[in-house]
Picture 1 (cartoon, rainbow, N blue to C red):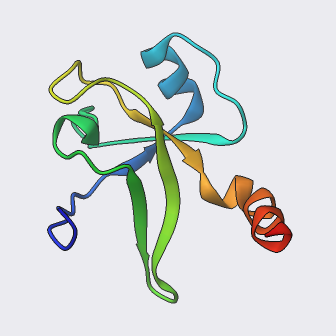
Picture 2: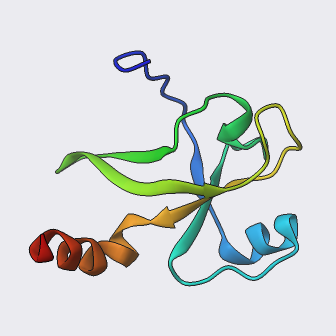
Length: 97
């Protein structure tokens, strides 16, 4: 439901740790995030967005949900497409339309 977002404090998970959890290699355009307890944000909300609150820029979109466990699934970090890593591709798409 728009306007009813739930904000949770989650952290980016190191690539090697995430790869161990998911038993797969991640591309450079992916990042992982989860709660400090090891939970995935996926089991707590259905949002496909990973935002960061910065001291200088306010809220910044860092990731879009790519894959991970279903809601209520195992406690693995969620995997997101890294918006900064694909920003040049996004800008190319916007400029071609």
